Image 1 (tube, rainbow, N blue to C red):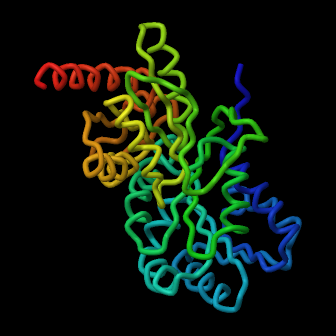
Image 2 (image 1 turned 60 degrees about the horizontal axis):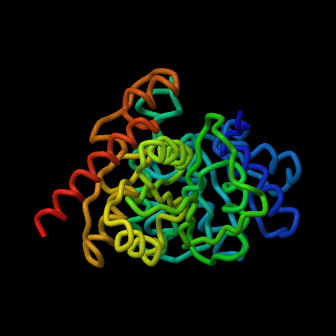
Length: 320
């Protein structure tokens, strides 16, 4: 049985680890310190943590001010608030000035569950990746989230949005596995089609690939943990070598990771594509498992999309 850990734990512990080595890091919270796991930082560095109440727009402005004074501010709250309620302040105060502010988008996706549509961040990737200077990260498990927050702080210089979830999910990537912002990760080789997944759906993509293998279908799996800047090289190579792509994300299909992949593929190496994600609708209240099933975000849905895209690939080959 694969051990499960919330990705928010990786964010919180990773932030505390980075702060041990860098006293310029400032933590900014929004009255939900424990919920987004900034408590690890706050308990260890109380003089560098400020809980500013439910005032996300103010937090973004304060973060910009700290960055202008050569600190490295890390703000985190639910993704629906950190990425959307604050959009004007992030765009003008942070991105326009290209400031090194780390923005944590917690409780992202529909798997937040009972909190319902108002708290389910399903559009944050689309919004954040459209902003100039912004780096957008969507790590697949707690271990990778830990690496992402550390590298975002230590290696980058502009604004960064890190997306992570609330529920415990399989923590399957090895601690020693390399992680590089801006580079997709090949998790499984394959020749018949490619599954490009991000966030929680990377695990579902791997399970889908195992089932497809039993059917004689050889699926490549790519973990696209960096949505922006996107790794064009790994995607174009996949399109050329496998000739069919399925994308999978816990986010709206329109404007999300799948759209970003399509932008690359349509220009450089067009091939049949199919998309697994939220289909232009809001979520609702329910358990995470119920919602992931209802909205088609499981390995079974990826398998269905793979069969569809292979059919398109076969039809195209017959045409030519």
